[in-house]
Length: 357
Image (cartoon, rainbow, N blue to C red; front, side):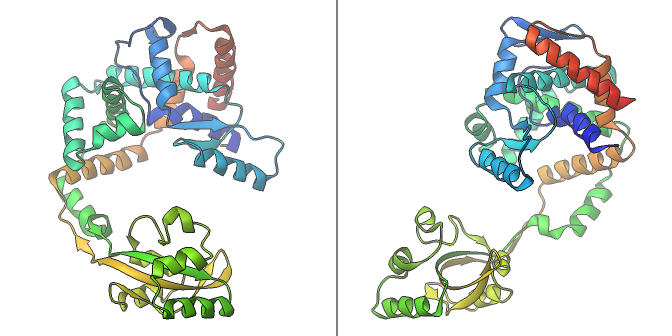
């Protein structure tokens, strides 16, 4: 399959994760702006999707590759959404409409195959996720701007998608046990360290820093005054805003994790030669705290999610879910009221049908 065709099919499925809005037969309030095999999409649903859309697709044409990638990074840094390069994708309004159309089709597929999740299934999923993380619902409401109704519909959609993939697949408790045994890192909190640091680029600057520290000045004060760290003010002299896994320090220097492990809490290290973006530099670290590695026993909730993940992986091996959804979209009777969006949709379906040939 060509790259262009892959992009088109993936754009048909980009929406099979992270969608919000109403789905299972009923609809949210507001006037109908489209129908999918008779199931209506309302203006309220479209607004919900636009408010909390987790990903967008953009076209960057006429730009050198490095400039395009820089632009993407700027876009990604400026919003919570994921930004993906793709072919002609239409307006954000059209992308949100396409998301909702895909949602309707997936719910219809799940209903036809007898795997549409019930309200009880949705409530059980909320309970499971909340038990794993008490702030689960609150984070979606604040971080994704989702209403409780939208959260429930999103969960229902996720379950429907998974049910389509895993239909006919059986995962045993032994399969789960084997996975846990083979993936101990998933159930281990790594050793972490909280560090301040002073970054310099020359031997002369090292001497100046040492002279300041020798006067008894606080490490943080010297760091804020003399460090070359570009994130100095943002992190208030810290290497990172939060404690980081000690093993990650090997990215600066292979021996740095051992150096940190050998340094007592509330003590500085000596100077360490490190590499940053291919350039040699020197750093001195101050150890605020250390947290030892901790192994965790998988919970009952962990086992449920592992079983689900294994089912999706195994089910996907024998199914072409992306193709199946794309075919259903191409075959569906879809009526869109907005004339501009209607034309864009007709062009999209035409391309989709060509891709599926």
